[in-house]
Image 1 (tube, rainbow, N blue to C red):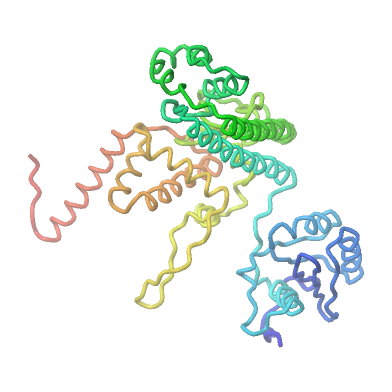
Image 2: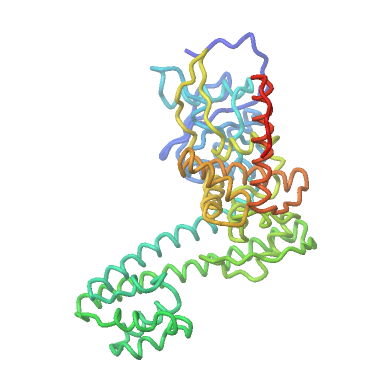
Length: 438
């Protein structure tokens, strides 16, 4: 039933393969019958005891949703060398797909060293990851309630979304709160705004505040407002826990690291964490926020996804490929075929978000590169290529100790011109022509 691999030598002779499901897990140990265990914590401990009886030292399991996490923690705590593998790397032969055969196949491939180990960060990074990902989820839920508030305001013909850049800005929320407390006078509602907003948009805001205050629309606005404030409070609680983890992480790293670069402002969703910049610099011993598009908020999220040990990826190519930012390649003979694109990791998505902001920026040289590529191949390819360049620079800061210096758009254009001249000179030599400079 299984492939004959007698010609290969075993790398992990005392190994086990585990196939994980929502209700049962199947365990294969060489020369033993496949056993199954239920997915309760006590059953996981029973499984660990069984593996010790069989003198198992290495365990391989597939990364299935979130089911693997608790089992991974239990086995790791009991001293096993646990390897998490990508299910795409351990596909069984067609027509032989059962849970029993899956765990046997995983065990056999792993014992011969034919499965790659997936990246699993250390425990404190996994803990930080939980809080930062939860924070992102709460922000996404809060944004849906912002849309509900905008809908309720539009139903009342209160045109704040048209005159304010953000309905949930400080001025916008102050006016909404006053409306919900019973205020209807446009002049008094306008007084809730900042001085600069009153000066620049005061007349338009007064016109926007003349609405149709029907009871059912006010109720809808109240519901949306309460939902938004609830999730904002949840975000604040996530920030408190994130700050504690960052403090613990900083204590075990380069907490005395100093940096002379100015701190970049965080425009949206700024975490309420004291000394966030210095905590992050202490964790990494470097300052990646000197790169265009990256702020302390970006670095906090990247820290939760990548940790502070870039050496876990042997090279830049490995790092970019893991992020999902490397261009796909599927060649057979003279044919270049289309291949299924590797999905982006969360860290890769963070780099793409930074690349989107770079695309709109007029100052960094990377912005000029992104706009030039966008004109040729479209925004999707331009953003991915810029994200890849940004990820490569991020890797070099930690691997080579590189200090990034922004040279600006002018220097990029000069470098591009030099490359074009070299190319033209080469072509002229091939055609036996001569370039004449005007």
